[in-house]
Length: 67
Image (cartoon, rainbow, N blue to C red; front, side):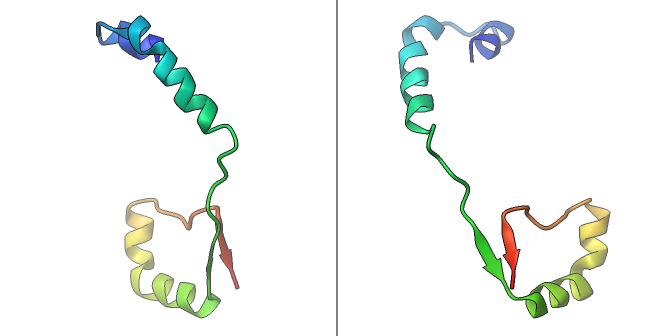
């Protein structure tokens, strides 16, 4: 955050530093949500929208479990 403040020439980093630290500490146990989706649904999406996924270089999220 300090680097961002410096590069953008923003005032007030020192006054905000403790709030940033508090927020970061509150997130240290954060875990990504896990999502499940049926293989048939993924197959339909890829069949109908695979061209768009390829065009935009989009892949399935890594935290998605296919069942």
